[in-house]
Length: 253
Image (tube, rainbow, N blue to C red; front, side, top):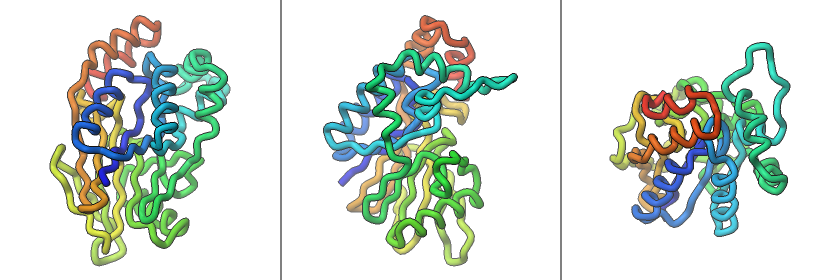
C-alpha cells in the first residue's frame, strides 16, 4: 500500500491539485492530509471542500494550527503574526459547515505502527515545532507512549523535509533526503519525518513538497513537484491579501 502524505497546503489550490495528481500517478492508494489546510493562500474554501471530499472517500485528515485559528480567530496582538493577519479573513471565507469540519478534526491519527500528527506528538495541541533531533526525540517518545507499536511518526508544520531515526544509541540522528529517491525505513528502528509543505515550501525552492510511504516495502520518498506558483501568487494578490504571501511562493520562503 502506498500512502501519500500531504501537509501545510495553506489554501494553495494549484499546489494541492498538482500534488494529488502526482501521487495518484505514482500509485498512491491512501491519502493522509496532515493539517494546515488554510491560512496565507487565496482559496481556503476550495481546499476545505477538496479535503472533505477526500475524507468521504477514505482519506485520513488531522487538524493543524492554522485550521484551529480559522475556527477560533485569536485576539489580535499589538504586533500580529502572519498567521493572525489571515485568520480573520480565512474565517470569513469559510462556510459554517466548513469551519465545523475543520474544528472536528482530530489532532492525531494512529494506524498500526504509524502515527500522524501535524506538529509534535508531545502535546500536539501546543503546536510544537520539530526543528531538530531533540524535538524529534520528544515527539517520538510521546508517540511510543500513545502506542508501543509506533515505529513511524509523520508530520508537517516546519515546511521542510527532514528524516530522523533512532540509531544504536538513544540519540536520534538527522538525515537530509534527496528528492524523489526512496529511503528504506526498516521497522526494527523508529523513524520520524517532517514531510514538508505542499503550498508554501520554505527551503529556497518553489516546488511543492509531499511524501510517499510504501508500507509494503517500508520505504519513504520525499517528493518535489513543480506547479504553477505564479497563478497561486496572482490569486493571493487578487484576493487583496498582503503581497508578501504571494512573493514568497517563487522564492520558497
